[in-house]
Image (cartoon, rainbow, N blue to C red; front, side, top):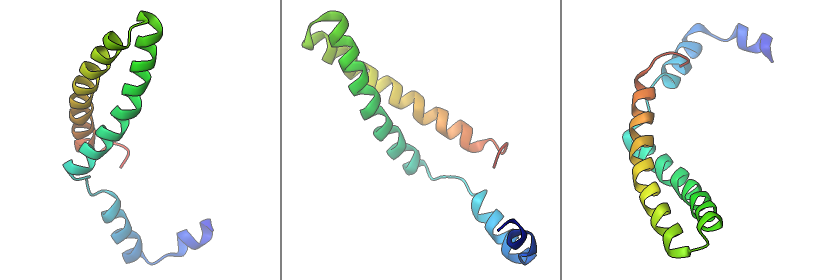
Length: 87
């Protein structure tokens, strides 16, 4: 397997590298932020409910958490997408 990769045509390797270094589109970052926040918000809701014993308080905390952390995650993703290190 490794030997096959070393023998590849330079043009094929270059085009693959060019594809890999392209950045994600912002809409992908939004989709990732939403899916991650659903998971994170469920966690926050459960923990908040365990600590407070009140579903209304837990839902309020989870709602605020969902919005603020989704926004923070989006900008975090966009900043990291602009960093060439590790691409």
